[in-house]
Image (cartoon, rainbow, N blue to C red; front, side, top):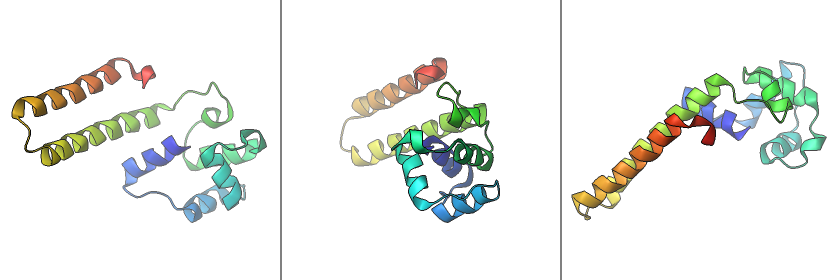
Length: 131
């Protein structure tokens, strides 16, 4: 669920509030309580989450319900692509932070940090199931 919420931020720039999710799920025939939402988000007591709640959430997030209802459900392609973009954006931000905060280190060390981040990104592109 948290992956879906991260993707929403990547796509639209603003995270959903509980009221947004509650209203959206209601449109799909399910009344979501704040307690149930907290349990879904934290993974607490997954056996007590009704399938109807997961199906309504999958409709709200516009994904195949199998992703939420079946342990073997695969990550939807749209979500995977958005997560790759999000990872890339975070790495870019990390590079900028490193350059600003470690500005007094030598250029060779900063180049090594950037190369390491680039290597990790390349590895993830070539082995997406490992990330």
